[in-house]
Image 1 (cartoon, one colour):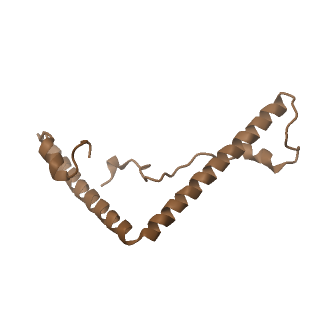
Image 2 (cartoon, helix red, strand yellow):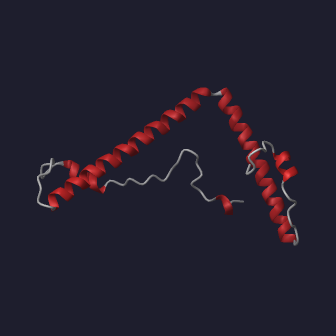
Image 3 (cartoon, helix red, strand yellow):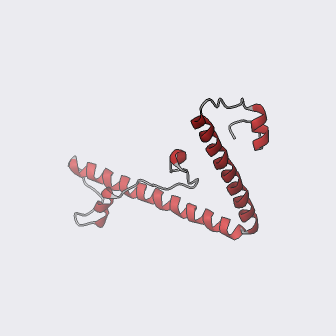
Length: 128
């Protein structure tokens, strides 16, 4: 909820101004959003219940994201090292890599991460 001191949907409705429903399209959009809100609330309730009954799944998920973060940090570190060695070589310095070292390939590592723990990467505004 977008209110600091509101914890339930009913409390939010009590403090929020009434929606301005002028056209049939406004009413339909409002009804669609209300249905989405109910689905979201039920999903959150079900996930809370699932976490309570399946703590091993919560632990497995946390371990997965910890490994994922560590792997991403390692890719960043390896890429940064390769790029720094490339810059040293371009400036005529002595690098720690030999000419046939596989670590030179690390400068091409993709360090972008298209997933996140919260799962909010998708834009749900057009979801129906």
